[in-house]
Image 1 (cartoon, helix red, strand yellow):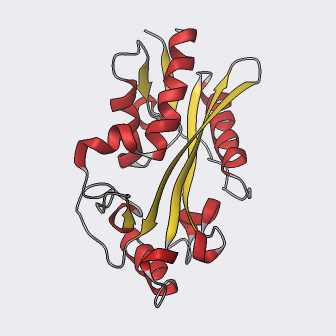
Image 2: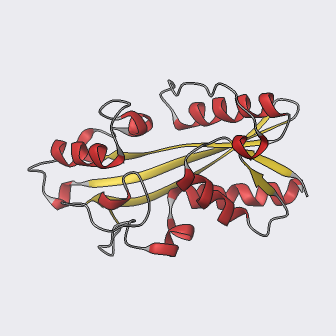
Length: 196
């Protein structure tokens, strides 16, 4: 069975990706599974694609395996698309997910629900031998809730509200098919099926 290296140490992302890759004929492994250590590139690019590609290429070069990496974030209309590709570092690198969501809610104080439009965006990059890189993008539209709700998920999930009023932290297993990452990965799974 061919292996693809997941270039992440985020347990939530690893779980999500492995569930989506189940049954594809690809074995999803992490650097930890392989006892592999390498310096992941710092996410300094201003686009999700550039960040995802840099991470996938670094992992592929370090491992000799095809490597899958993503970059994702939340884009808030009232903040002119911020935090965007800087979502994971919004407010500083030492903040927890809960602190980051609290900061985002603070920045939106006084903004009515009708003006809290937002989207999750993810770009998944697959780095293959021969310097070949394939990318896929997924988007999930919604808005920022007035307060966190739900216990599932990670990151901004407790404050990202879907059109039906639930947050992505309240939808449980549905997230595996609805999320921005799932949408990008579903498209990438078709690429992997063609390669396997």
